[in-house]
Image 1: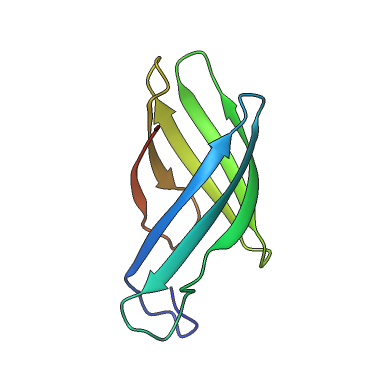
Image 2 (image 1 turned 180 degrees about the vertical axis):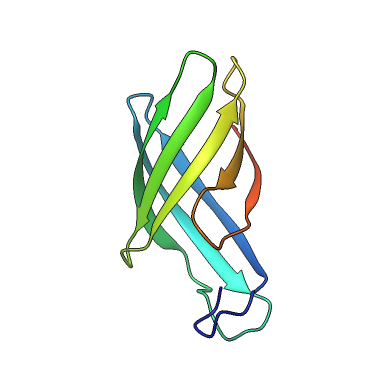
Length: 100
């Protein structure tokens, strides 16, 4: 949502490294389609995650601006892809990450 509580379309791209011990580090770029909000340069982020035995993942990321994002995710047993949804209020965002 924008500052005046209107929905804003956005796009995100980035990459992150999961260390296998519950920590993430990466860069993310977010831009909006209205050209008024968002960033057009990569912003570093760090995070923590947990993976359960049934491949459910909970992740919390904090970027360099202090913004915190919560994700609810699923990865298969091979760990080559993660399907995710943003679990924060008033956000509709989801997708798939693949491992190189």
